[in-house]
Image (cartoon, rainbow, N blue to C red):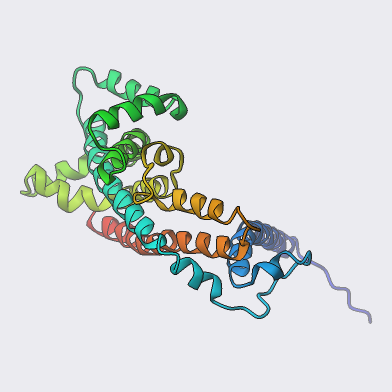
Length: 292
């Protein structure tokens, strides 16, 4: 007797979602590789000499890799001052932006006051103004305050540019936390301040981290405002320094190995910052869920 194998419909239905998940995973992996390839190419090129980079062949691996490009960038004498300038401007912008945006988001989400809608509309309209149209006014303002080529001067402009969008980001997070949680804690004997710090604030920690990442990236990578306000060679942020570094080598053939090494060094603090706050974001979610 010949036995016939009958495929159950339930088994077929189980295979289809599995195939769909595998296809989605493969597509996500492909997108991730496409996204990560320019970063890999930058790092790979930073370990090769300019001669090898310009020989017309594609080198997917750093053959005869060396640290000469990084040594040359570090020995240029201008990288460390630019790094200190960028760190000072970025962290000052980050701290002040989070404080102002957090208080503003709390005000427009938790309280009803006269002029609330006008304030929200003003925040939205500010985002619609082209940054290039404000350069002359910003330059004259910072110049009248004698803050050109200073950390405080460029930080003021960065804060003014980043705060409106950060307020909108945090407003969504604050509005997503029910006020009933605070009221329940107050019924249990906590004051309003204690209820906010112990119950609501841990739930808002992921929003603060996400807004902080946005503010950090905007201040760290900003180029045009810094180009207008920071004109002294002694006060340059890293994007301005990289431009001058490329121009300095324009008198001869551009040393792309050193340019890639400099770009990699600029990207390292961003990666370190993101890895640090990623853990804080996870812990904030868990802590908020437990306390809520």
